[in-house]
Length: 262
Image (cartoon, rainbow, N blue to C red):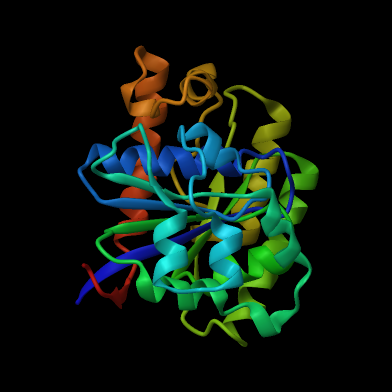
């Protein structure tokens, strides 16, 4: 047995860059040689596409339908980002069926992880909603980050996400803890953003993770080319890569659950 970090990446507002943060953390993880699995629970399948993966014999919907060794194996595909270090449990629009299920089903992914071995880091990319898929994803995790950007409606959504995490801790996921809030797309010298950042820090204190993720076109360019940001040339890409290195360091310092490595 060894320990593995199972980290949920969530937001309750679309368009804040939740998947970009998942991909940045995956890039940082393989850069330091960690065996990594990205589980794409978002029915839009953006992580699957950006990681250069096409579902073959199965997908995450099949895993949720019948959690087990065979369904997990069929849904897990190596990513061209690094076929030795990075696998993807492929997303599917069919998973939207499980977004409407009640809490009786939230253990399905956690149960499926019993057949997931050999990884140092598992990243769960949740949908931008409070539905059954997000609850299922977070129930399987040890830690969760809430992604936001420094805008009025995004800041309001952080509170709803934190309440959901707390609700799950009191129910089906007693081991789940919030790692903190990742603030994405931060622009220098924006008065409005400075106000929202101060508001976030007043509300959540040390749960607001540092450093903030700067708004840089290099991140979108790398992801549009289906490449890790750590491999993208230029100073802006290196700055963003360094940010994700620091955020991953913070996540790796958190206590992890014991799961088998096979």
